[in-house]
Image (cartoon, rainbow, N blue to C red; front, side, top):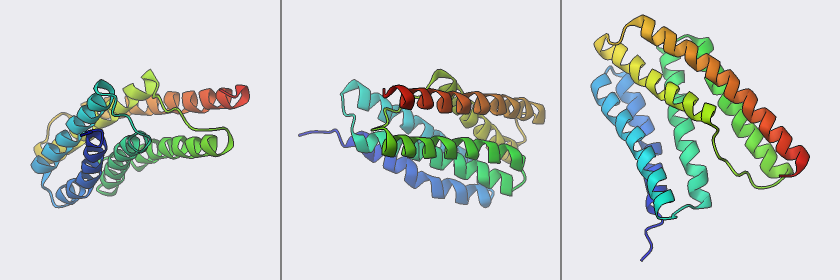
Length: 181
């Protein structure tokens, strides 16, 4: 019996956690939102580990995993901007980068060939900073910790890594398209 469906099921679980997390945040249930958010983050590591360790990689999983990540991150940035917990411009920049990446991947897939999506180091750093920032925003809203300056510095770091990773994706995919890689 094959268990290769498990990483995909975990990614679907992560997608299903988005709505309860948002509802909890909008209703002031920050403690439970943080718990579910951490569960989503942990599950992201587990599905990736299982897929690599047991070679349970699938084309569906390669699509579901980043969709789950982007859905969670984008929806939280939009929600926090709506609640005025973060600046609208920061949410816009983060979401614009993701739109550029998704649109670029779709265009590449349509015009050149299948996308071999392997995130760069700066993109991984950006994602880690975004997740930490979102956790800190929830924690600040619910428990007044960490300090506002911590979140400001983290937000500035996100801006820098969003711009660098966005430019890096556009440049590397353009190069691949020109050379036919």
